[in-house]
Length: 164
Image 1 (cartoon, rainbow, N blue to C red):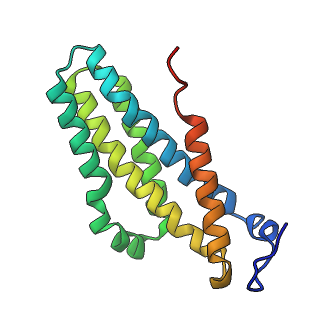
Image 2 (cartoon, one colour):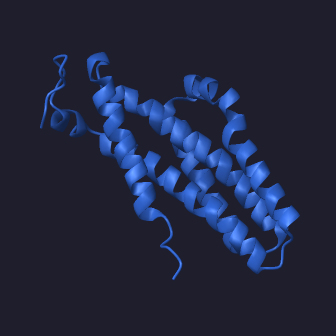
């Protein structure tokens, strides 16, 4: 594998570090689950007779839940560590799925979407912060580019197939 132009370690050496694959995978899972459920929820709400207005409100609160925690997620990471925040995010994503599977009333969707947003924020931000533990400053661009390639590649593979 190629070595970073500024004298960094070979990429293969970097990715073989203990915890690297787990960290990238957790960020990818957070993004994939969020993308899939956020996209599927409005269609499911429509199919279960929930109004467009209620569906819109659910997505609006989901977006607030995705980005609102950004005002304090960094402080939580500083206090508890990126790995714990990442784990909390993955737990919230799992809870979001369970709430979504529990029923088809509007509150199931809304609670699921809010948990999904917070879970994505914690999971993705925690994993993105953890990636910094695996590279030296001169390797930053190379490692973060690989992380983004994998995360968004997994998200694309995990998306729902096109309708036929």
